Image (cartoon, rainbow over all chains, first blue to last red; front, side, top):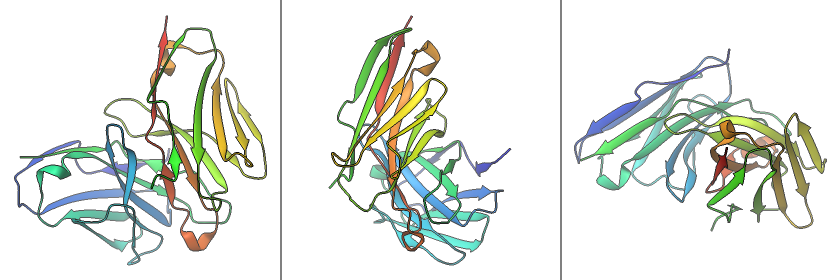
Length: 114
Length: 115
C-alpha cells in the first residue's frame, strides 16, 4: 500500500517562529510537491522537486523554502510564520515520466499561526 | 491567472441521479488530466484520469470526458451515492518530463448527494 506521511496532523505556532513540515514517501517517487489548500482557492502549489537537491518554485513560494536531501523526504520551511500562512498543507509524490502520472497525497497538516 | 478553473463552487444532486462536474483549462501544454476527491481533514485521493489522446475514460460509476478543442473536461458520476459527497478537484499537467509533471489544480467543487 502506497504511503505519503506528513509528520503532524495539527500544528499551532506563533507569529515569527520558524516552522518545519516534514513529508516522507515510501514509493521511490522522483517528484514531490507541497500544496496549500484554502477555501475557494483550491490547491495551490508552493514548491516541487523532481530529484534530490532539486527544487522548483510553484505559484506561491513567497515566505516558504524547501529541502530535499534524500529522495524519500521533502521538507517545507516557513522562515518566519505569519497569520496568513494559516492553512491546510498537503504533501504529494508522483513518478516522473512522459505522459503524466497521478500524485499520491498525505493526510495533510492543519497549521494555525497565532 | 488560474490555468484550471472549476466555475461551480457547489453542486447538489439527488441520490441515484447523475452528477456532472465541469472543469476548464487555459494552458494548451496540458496533456494529462485527473480528478481527485477530498473528504474533510483528509488528503485528496485519486479518482480517474485521462490522457489528451483520448476523449473518454470510464471506471465503474465514474466517466471523464475531454473536449480538447474547447479545453473542457467533465466528470460524470452515475448513479450518485451519498458517499460521493466530497470536494472534487480537477487537475492538469504537462506530460513532458522537463516540466516535472507538475500538477495544477482547480478551486474544487463541493458535491452534496441527498438521500
